[in-house]
Every structure is written in C-alpha cells, then in structure tokens.
Length: 105
Image 1: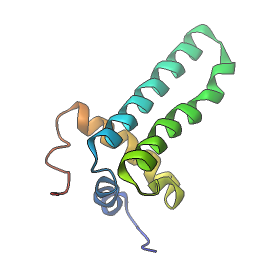
Image 2 (image 1 turned 90 degrees about the vertical axis):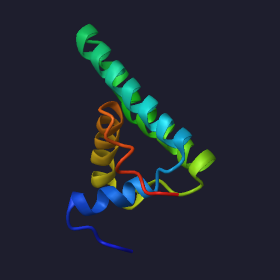
Image 3 (image 1 turned 180 degrees about the vertical axis):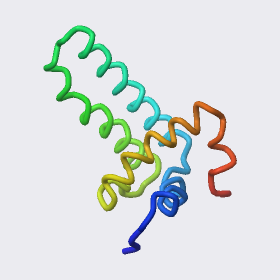
C-alpha cells in the first residue's frame, strides 16, 4: 500500500479513483446535502439531524463507488485525506477547475 506524505500527492490518486461522472455526481450530491442538513440543523437547533451527516455524505459516495466506479472508496485506506479530497473535488467542480485535473481515460 502506498503511503502518501502530502495531500498534494494524494489528490491525483483520489481523482483517478473517481473517473466515472456518475460517481463524482453522487459525491457532489452527498456533499451538498451534508451542507444543507448541517445549515438546517444549526439554524433550527434541531441537533438530532447531525447523526445523518456521515450517512448522507458517505452513503452517496459509496453508492457511486460500488455501483459505478467498481472500486473501494479511498476513505477505507486514507480517511482524512479522502474527506479533505471530497471537499476539494467539489470546490474544483464548482469553480470549473476539475476538468484540467482529471486523468485522461
């Protein structure tokens, strides 16, 4: 198993594990729903919703891996880098920077 010493080394690997567009779309959906539920929980002070955050975030992402990408989520081997990469990938997608970073098929 490769050990990544820096996030900058890990992120290209992470993107290579997320080449299927539906897998990435499911990641984006889960991340955006996490933000929405978090905001709602904070604004409404309905704290019981917070337990849903990992279910929503990981649920959508893992469906993408198991049903479309056919690989194991990077979070199983690299939980902290993977969590950070989810948010960086969403930011790159929303700002139009992702296309230049995706590996060629």
